[in-house]
Length: 358
Image 1: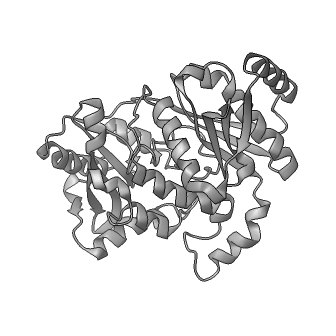
Image 2: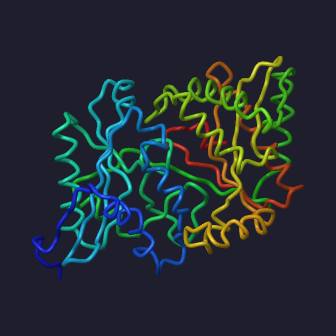
Image 3: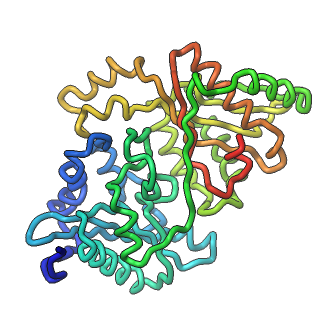
């Protein structure tokens, strides 16, 4: 039986010690969950650091820790993304980094405090989770608790969906992800589709992303992304600073065999970026690079047998012509050579019928 709500308390974080507690809470909260993958602590710190994350140039965030009977019991962030509201002409606040024990009164108090903070700043709606932006980990896992999450995909306690509903929230959009394996993929069908697309678009070519020119490549990707996604749910155009930060991260982890740009008559029209699933290595690192985390990455990175197709875009005038199929096929064929067994494709919006069909 749930105890009195009076046994719950929430702290508005103002000190480094409290922020450290906020960041560290999941590592104890999930310590008995087989399929949770501890994220790198340095990356979590960077996400929440206004000096290192360009997202905060146009955003505000407040962090809250919860306790139940004097023990750590949860956390939540309240976020205002000014560019989102300017682009959508909205007054939407976000919540993020939600973690909580299985106690409705604790979750209710966290959300009430965060909602009050957002309301005091003129927000009328709340959307989430976004950790902290719509380009980071988003959503609550509702299916697939018996599988390891891929890189930059969330994993949650199975009761979170009920806690959210109990606090008055309802689903806004289903985000889908698909697993394609070398055993399940229909290569003959993909090859036939490639021939059809090449007959329609004889000047199309697919090339690998050039890591030695990553800044120029990321500028191309940014232009395609902002054009391709502009009518999608939750979209905001990403800034050059955000893509510059992305370029630094991509240069470290991207494998050009799984990152491509499609060109027609030499003009970039589409891109696809798949990331090696470093979660296969992070599972055993408990979030720490030191003292031996770097060594584990160096030794094991060539043994990763899964990628996650995390970003894809086709400019509007070429959508629906099968270019996305060509990009997927290229990654599949390269995967056969490189020993990559599977690709997770997502997330994909539930109303993106064309991509779901692919």
